[in-house]
Image (cartoon, rainbow, N blue to C red; front, side, top):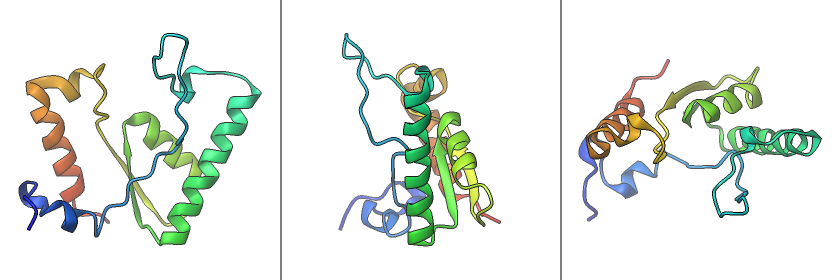
Length: 125
């Protein structure tokens, strides 16, 4: 038996209903090794990259019959809204656990954990 994650059940139970996928599964690093997110890059190549990532997300959602998508952070929510436009999919968001996020780091991350738990347990339409 696994340990429980609050009222969400064991990790095994959670993953029966939750599938994690990165919108952009590429790791883009600057010269110093710092992560560069696609929203910080401009140009035609990035437009093509984002289109490919949007298409991938749409394919995952339609293939798996997913009815609810939670963007981890506002950027992920925005990309999901664009990629899944016209599909019968509920799209929401939770806070991103970035070290740069004051919300994610407040109270040693307890507020972030509460936010994610609330979003995962929310009744969806």
